[in-house]
Image 1: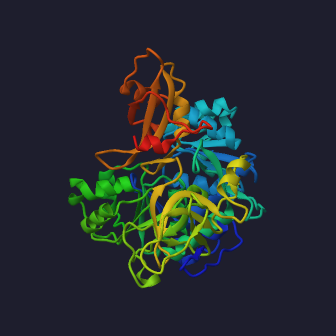
Image 2: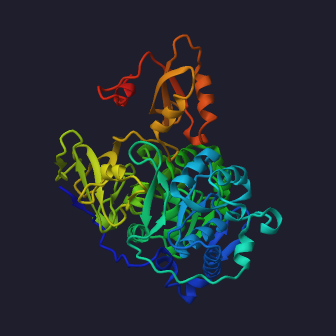
Image 3: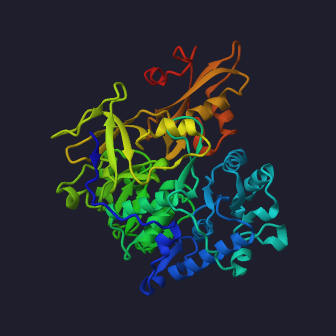
Length: 536
């Protein structure tokens, strides 16, 4: 049977993301600090940020960007990213955020599929951005380089060109329930990356759901090293933290020493992390050199956090560590543990290993993947294991141009199949126990096996190949492992395979383990039997 959220229902206004986040900004909050770039220390108030967002939106409109257009955004975390992102949405356009680790080939795929009319980037990423823009036919004036020298110098507008024009944001009319706000790319439960259509209502709903579960306040200083181009950073940090009128201290990339120094210098109170960061916080000697005593809560997401590891971080830093769960298709948060572990919510504290309770205004259920039968919430203890299904206002509108994949993921009643196996306790708290889907999660990034298999099969010495997620014996993390069948008489080493794939994909997608076998196990229909590979 489905089980409901224990969080009280929240109001989800019929509003754009911009109006929901900033429309009711009062005078007391306007002069609060919204954004701080950690490297430079530059601070931006809410009043300044909103003025720049509006000017950015106006400049985009002057350049012909209108509702229905898609704008690519390829940049690391910064105040410039925040203003560009919200400027795109304020203009009524759709932002497709692009991983900064992408090669030019990867960028071309996303720009092409999304039919992007413009690309916004930074100087450090200009070589691959320029190559990709040229490949998809974007002219120089359609490639904005936020920190570049400007259109008068190299033909590429920069932030000063856009903001300096002083253009007013246009009044745009659209239905928040159907109008696409963002188009991030996800591999779903299997296959190659697909554009995830998230509406303004999806994002507004998820921020409201997060606010019901997490008590980030105006007094909080929140560290933001999780990338804004990823749905976790985008919604939980760039949207929810700003809605809370807290301070967002941004790092362009993760560096442990910089993170610790930023926590100490800016007196960070709340940190959202992923499990690889937890490993560093639990074990690295650098941690003891910095004052982290201002931290009052840490939430881990993007991949399951081991309970012992979470406890080690909590004990070392002296603050609660809790988990959340979600996926791009869910905007992303579907389950969350409050900072107090759930004591006020249910009267008891969830184990650190729990993913948490169903988000407000939503339902969950567990379905036996073999029989299709629903699994009941137990009167005590933990339920049997089943695939986690979810239904709520944050469920995506579907995959761009892919009705088949959409239908395979969301049923006729609106239930989204997560592809993750879970159990539930008597209070409705969910525990993720395994992955039913083929997708590999490496350091929080999605690595679709099918994509790596396609690359491997282009090697002349490889006859067949399959990729699964395997455990790194040192860190316990999931890593891509390739099973390779050599062509008859071919000479090929593990290093050869690893180097070949590394030259074709983004760094996080690299194969990290290789095994040579005589044949790839397959079903009668030709489907790779990954469970057989996992047991080999």
